[in-house]
Length: 386
Image 1: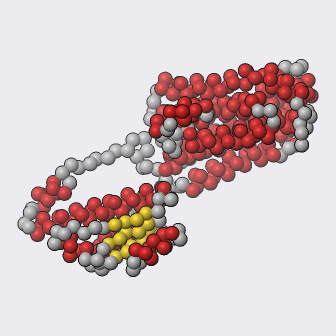
Image 2: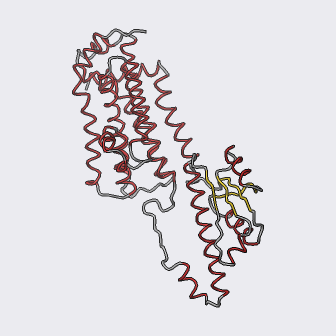
Image 3: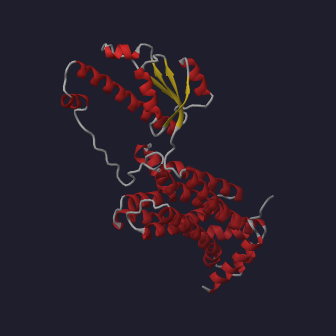
């Protein structure tokens, strides 16, 4: 403990004299916390710009336009004379889609000739396209229902007989865990820790690599009597404390200030955040031992950290991935943190259900133990080349 405390004090002095440490530990995390939470403060993007091509000009088409414009996600910002003009505007990025009402729509609908209503979406923007599709598809179905209702009423059908024909089965939807369908709940609970863990990995590799770059690795080991374990533990301890503080900050913001769902209690998420930080540090040490050069280790840490956003399963379900990728995603600490979050915070599962993920993060802590001799030899013999 004396050696660890002495090395931790030495590391604190290095961090004070080299501002890149504090800048990399504090600034990216705080900047991302502010950016992502404010960017998705509404939960979902609303009033997305869309266009309308009304070739009919009837009272029915005007009612459709007003109703679609009143929907949550759609904002009719332009009326276009032709579909070609609307396509050009969509290609320019000024609208995400448009609704097309053909000529003679009202007359054909009332005569039972089933006119075709079309809508076109720019799915290069997946979220915008999906949300507009929801509104426009709903509008098309409601229009069809209103026409059928008018036809049945004209034939003398009573109102109580019309509704079962239009909707024979009533749907009662209850989204679980995130009933508001708030994208911020889905994304920020993984984006914020993901950015933090990426920074953890990079700073860990950099801090060990600079000992070789500035030729202080021998002095570092000598102060610990040549023992690599207290030397490594003391070096990483100040960083662990600061990164854990950043982790507690986003936990406080998400669950304390923004009141995101926390069905399993605060303790599992706090424990998972601190454990994920330590596990990522251990994985950073593992990467440093695995690659012969500091630059290569930094590149591998960057690649691994960025891939974790895609492969952890919060943006694309892991069960739909290729079997090889399903096996690979267990090698990412963020994946196990995500499983703890989904199981505990969202689903309120008992601790026994998320225990395998806690154990997996603990296994990451043991990775450097397999390469300590290699790390010590590398620190004593490696000559840094500019």
